[in-house]
Length: 464
Image 1 (cartoon, rainbow, N blue to C red):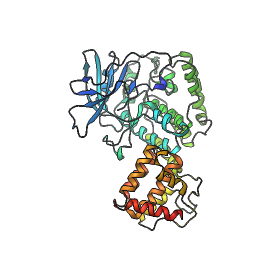
Image 2 (cartoon, rainbow, N blue to C red):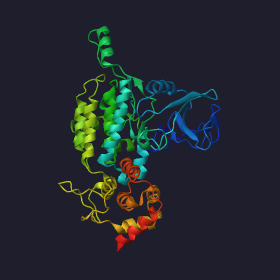
Image 3 (tube, rainbow, N blue to C red):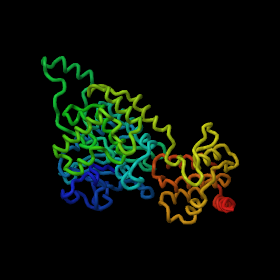
Image 4 (cartoon, one colour):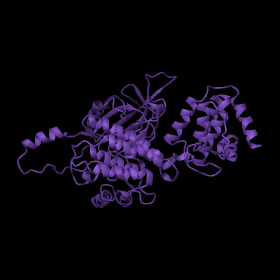
């Protein structure tokens, strides 16, 4: 997993980081050769490096992630958690462990992709995700947390920089468009309701049920309970998920500015953050003040409020249903826009987008191009095909693959639909968009040698 222990944006300005523990080409455990002079993730106590498994086939090399500590801090805890959680959806595979030079504990894990914090800051317009995208993310992370909680663990540090997108070919399902919840350094076993009741019987009369504990987690995403020093349970991971989803949609959080002004571990910042979170608890619609808090996130918050104790089990099915309700809205590339795209009619007679038109025609094996007012924006399609250098590389790649691999009878429709949508939004990096493109590629007809010629011919005819 390409673990970001602490994102670059989370490092305090002015705090000098020590030199990397590992160097490019250095071999760990006589098997893994470090690839690159810089870690792909770094924190206060540990770093994560990309490394080549030298036992893998050179024609298809396998890369792994090595998390190595400068001194023993949390590795043993993380190894135990990973061992106990193997097989849970969204938890990376543990491949090995040891001590480098007899002084640096390390863990070898599955290598993942970019984390959601970096993706949002570098590849998403206005650094804001659509409702459909946060639904896609939320459902998958919720499923992972449910599996982790079922095995008696709480993560205690759920945040965008600890969620990575599994790359294609990583073994993840659904074409590799899956998420990994990483960095289990703070994960711990939580006390179940049954164990809690048993210990309560042994506790002296009058002793407090919730003893104050040290703060664990990230100030920005920790729950109100964590700020109050209450032992964390499943509900607290879900509060962190809610804050992460709200931030992805809004672009920030009401208390984010406090952290930017002071150190994350500043007690005054923690207190002020706690106060703002309590306000959001009472008024969840204030989480996204500029874009408006999606109703689903408001309902998610109110449902979580019903979980009274750390050991209580949340209603995962209901919470999942709430997140899925965000999917009822059009996706980013299906909304009404310029160049003649119209939304679906009330009767559902017309598809909502070029991509939908192309997908429906290909699936139904009908004559392409509906005779409706959904005229194709040929200026954009022409620019995409003839001037590919002006569009994102990922879009370029799929333009070429569509032209090469699809059956001639459907290539023009799919190219026009998908490319127009991609150009209008530049959001092919969005998991939903790319997943849709992949589905079109899989479900359309088989590759045809004359695909490119057919596309060019149809394009010229449409121009005329």
